Image (cartoon, rainbow, N blue to C red; front, side, top):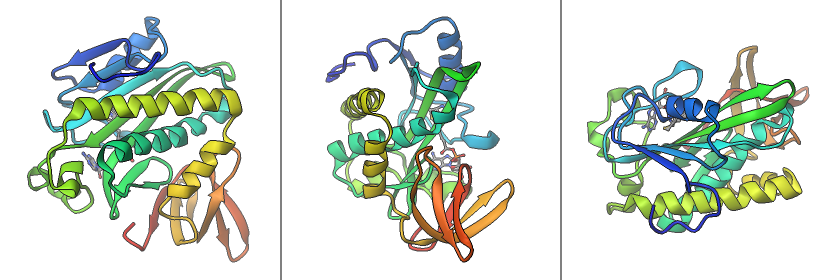
Length: 255
Ligand code: BT5
């Protein structure tokens, strides 16, 4: 990849013209011993995936569909830090190249004007209570023609080109994202989670808003306050403060 000024991230790369999912290839490569920072990138995914078995629409040539292999020396209980770290790093890379007002929606979406431009999928394998490896899946709609999208995402998604009004060259964008990610990841390993929490809170689109978080145990409605040490979202309800570890979140202001 030209333009790339990183130490490890993206230095080893597999490029796939078409693939079921870059996640699948990255898992296989990680099991075979891929080094930290190894990257799988595809022009098209036939079975791109989101969380909980959902599909990620990944048409050819118009997006960035990539998976980054990480080997952080952290306990499993800190794993959700990585999703938040990724949202912050990817947002900074995208902002550096496009200047667009991108907001983070907890835990894993990047939105412009309430519409999803990027989704992040963190999949990990543990060994006892430590993280063995993590696959960070990043999907970004770059030059997609929004009109050609399937109906179920047309109204909720957008692309960088649509928001910017011009096409965007993808390689420098990939490079910028990898650079920001590497910087923030290395700093996280040195200093821990608190600076990520601060950066996250600066750009989150939902703090101080009344939100509804749907979890597998039911929904919680209240005011989104901040993140706790584990990266859970703290919601103030009529009866107290509830930490939410995993949920779908909805709120008004264009959420
Ligand atoms: C995500 O899931 O947002 C994580 C998406 C991760 C995709 C990357 S691409 C590279 C790597 N390889 C993979 O196979 N996956 C990763 P989730 O929060 O579950 O959101 C999924 C929902 O987003 C779907 O149910 C749709 O409603 C919507 N969606 C699907 N495709 C979209 C797109 N291209 N743009 C915006 N929204 C989309």
